[in-house]
Image 1 (cartoon, one colour):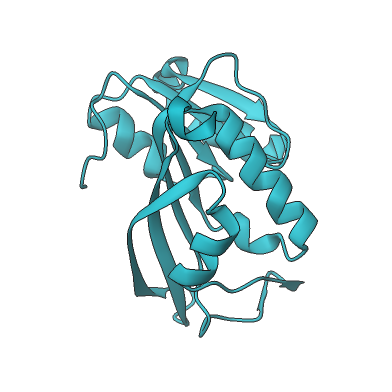
Image 2 (cartoon, one colour):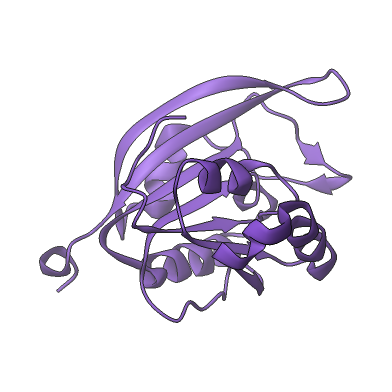
Length: 176
């Protein structure tokens, strides 16, 4: 696992679901982790899967477009939640929320369906993005640092293309 920040810094995982990422972060020494999901059932399952380690995780049931954190976070991580926002107004609300949640010069790490990815997921329409379209959507508050496309093999054997991007939130002087 490539480390973007030091273990002392705070990470929020958006659309956390029941993924193993949080247990991997805990094993790597991170202790300031927030799991955000719209589903309380998913958060409850994640907490149960983590066992005693769940004491190091804050669980927030919220929509990513309006989630509030008690303090600024260092890393906003989203693997596969943003692409469910197909409306420009919803995407703009997500960007505003992420920008408000991150400390200046914090990092947004996102993976979303690539332009050659599927048009639907779980029976729902999705937005597909290139690095350029992500840069356009997030550009008002973020600088694109790195991006790439990668194939993802689903548990049922299908291939899906994702665009991955790392962005840096603007410093206070860039915002003002």
